[in-house]
Image (cartoon, rainbow, N blue to C red; front, side):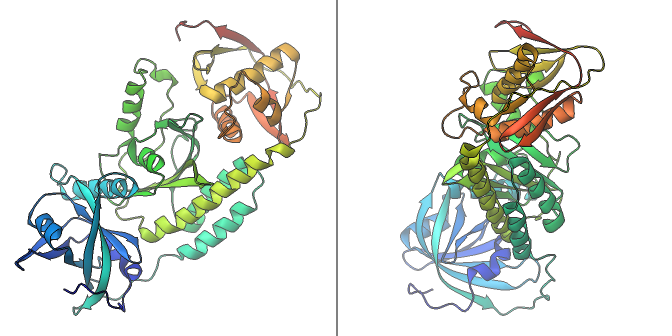
Length: 457
């Protein structure tokens, strides 16, 4: 091993498939007196063209050697062709928290579950190394496989399609459609960050039996919550119970003291036993907006290239959401027009609980939180003033809804409410009528009940 970096004919970017953890890597180190040691390594993680991170799980001879002598050699194997490469590295530092640590922790959990080592594999830190040289080791290898699709082309065409959208609902529909058609992704969802930054709520999904629109997950829980908390992509290549949905939802409910109120919790959509998962942050001006999440029943479905491509799309998504928000100042004013639809059927009772703005249609739960406050404002104006036409502007100015000045997400809440009504209330609709304008279409008589605090559900 040499301490001097030399130009390498092979880049780490060209062999990223070797870093997926399919085949264990091997690491060779030397003690201060030159005694060599070779052992297996759970994970080699790609950072950039000049750096990788190795999983630090035990305080063993390798750890002792690295702290005394920062040079190491790592051997990795391509999982498809069997090609072998040798990386000469210099140790720089260890990270025990933050985005890199969480990315490696999640991936290690998948590797551990896949190999039956859940009780053994535990990440203590992410050791960051500079790449000094990469060389190919002479070996027999299989032919390179034919790429299943061009991810670069798919990302470009998807970004062009997203840029042509004129509102958030159209944007979300186009995104999910492109993920299926251009990327072959059958299961996906988009979640937005709520106003207090503590939870994420589902605004759109594709490929699930139930859409789960309105379902929530706490920040920091599961693949989605960790990706949101750290503002970094989290990718798991094998099935793991460490980041399961039900555990995350239950933990969040218990923490909030809501264990006895599960009738107001919408189940989060998701595969019962996903083998690959990828959560990518949606950012706007360095601020978290939400999460793009995809999953699959297949092992190793999402690699580094998928992560890069979906990160590009998530960036475009964040820019478009920010653009829609900035354009809110130009919304049209509401007219005084009203339009009573033809009433059919028995009267429906709508109950509202002010403590959390939860809303029930007869005995069925509809929505809560900000979306619940918006819905209650609309139906109350409809009953009291015979109004059917509204604007986004007036909702922003309504103190009873309590939208924050920053990160108000009004459009996302309206999309959420609109889609919940389509699923749960065929006699109630929110229809877009212009820029920043919409209409409440009511097809059955409704009766409103404002429930006192402490009233049972």
